[in-house]
Length: 356
Image 1: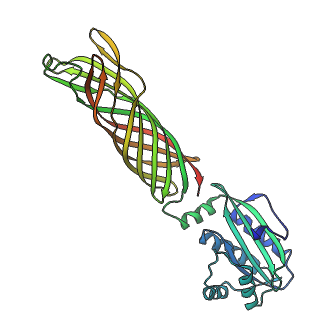
Image 2 (image 1 turned 120 degrees about the vertical axis):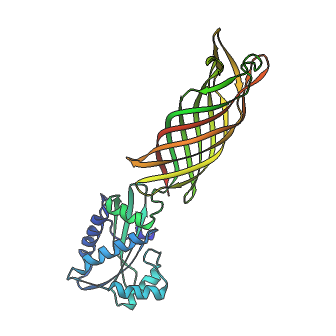
Image 3 (image 1 turned 30 degrees about the vertical axis):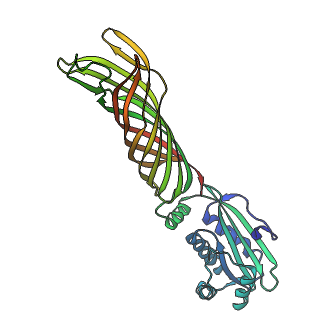
């Protein structure tokens, strides 16, 4: 907070990082005493490459101005090594004064670079007079994200540039089921040869994930799915029953995810709960009926890829889900009718929130 105290405040408009460096140089050239010896000491931030970029750019512009004398970067690097300082770290006023005195500098320049969100950063640069820590001017500006800044941030963290704590999204697609026959719909004595044929269905989901550590997230979903299948008498290929029901699946998935700048790859697995949200409809040659039913949870696993598009990421996803046991229908007692296994194909869109 010391960088915001005292001095003159300049340039509140949003600019690129190169424009900010140029404006800072003009600001200090107009305020420092001619022939001043200047030491550009540090830019405090969590990104060493950006600190280096700002210092090198500011040094190059000021060094070309005949009214100022800039302490060489190489000489400053040597004294930083002795003081065990890094240019992106915090430096106390006492240390800055001591280093400035060592080089005979009349002015010490320090600063800070702070990330405000996905699209905005704040840069503050302060000039301090050697000997009595009197402020000679404070330059502050808001920096917008552009190609140069994105490149610097990618270089700092190439494996996981899109850093957020929270992700929200939605997806929709088709699924196909592979159902084991539980025997509760048609008598095996009357129809000894039976098989179940799954009918493709539409599914949709809202999902939420939280980043715990780099490359690892926890994801949960509200997944609306439809199950439809035909029970077929294979001796004559006639359909005995057509079954349809809707359920809400709520998985808790452990997810490994790699998020570089333009795409993402993910894989996940975990258990799920499954809750009925309507009655089961059963149709047969003589009519139809509805009945209550219950489902067990199961295990889900899958993966997907994504491409950055606009503020979020377009996702393509494939996954498998298998119940722990049979679906049970409540009609004239409890009857186990089928065991559900499904493969899902979907497209979705994901937004990153709460940047680190």
